[in-house]
Length: 264
Image (cartoon, rainbow, N blue to C red; front, side, top):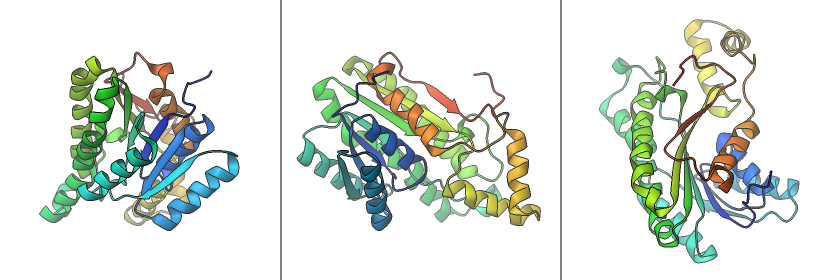
């Protein structure tokens, strides 16, 4: 299927590694012009070079980006518009908020989670909407968490703030449909990323089990019996960003190997 993404400008936040990188790589494979943003500039440059090595002729732009900093977000979008003239699609993404239970999280950590997870989505979307409205076209996708459907015990900040992002997306999808702007959420299950390895390591200490046994326990919860590959997530993401999904908006999609038991 031709997704119609050739030469489309797609901005992908937090794309130096993990799920963001998987999305950026798949977008490049579809012929899109990919604008990658990350705080980790050296890792970002290496990631872009990796994509360009795999996809000869791929056009990749990189830019320093801290999603918790409104000035950094404004700079990323402004420079992209100056360079390319328009933005066709945006992927809202960022590192997960700190793990912890209610008794472990102080006010400062609540504020960090708020800026990194909820306000980053607000600011990223707000920065691209004017251009999309003027052109009567655009697609936005937020990378959230399974915590928006099934709260996770030691990830309270994610439970709270990512649910807020999901509600934001639903509200905006109704508001922006008249401008032909689509906004959706994509929920990852267990994907083999640095974030998941960090959580597995934490659980290894808390459960007093080897890392291998922690992973074995997690695999048993997943009907497909494995962690997902970020490229699998990227393929789902670029479909939702593309015209192939032109009648899809305000939805929350799960890609988790069948782990989640909810039916809604």
